[in-house]
Image (cartoon, rainbow, N blue to C red; front, side, top):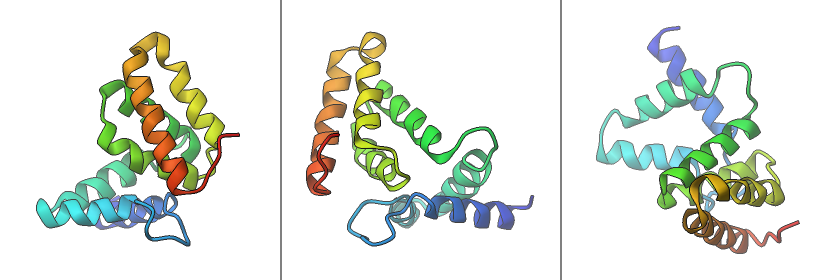
Length: 134
């Protein structure tokens, strides 16, 4: 697949994670555009590589991919990215309970401080979207 095809395929995959009715909810597309304005060419890395080559691989669905990514972000202490990824998890029908339980499951592996931070970010996202934990 050439670079144009990877970019187009990645852009289509990225849109699967967007909230179709509310542009105020953070999306990968918004982040890609913002980062590209700061660091030109970043959209090609995000859309072509991350989404065009990695997210389109067979074997995992969007829900599994986003839960793995959420786990990685919490483990790394990447709180700034959690808001975006929690929102996108909800956009691909990951339930609030699945998000919470994914984070709770991490406690014995990465510790309470990072999980508590993730749960705090989760609570903020749920409040913004008027979601109650199931």
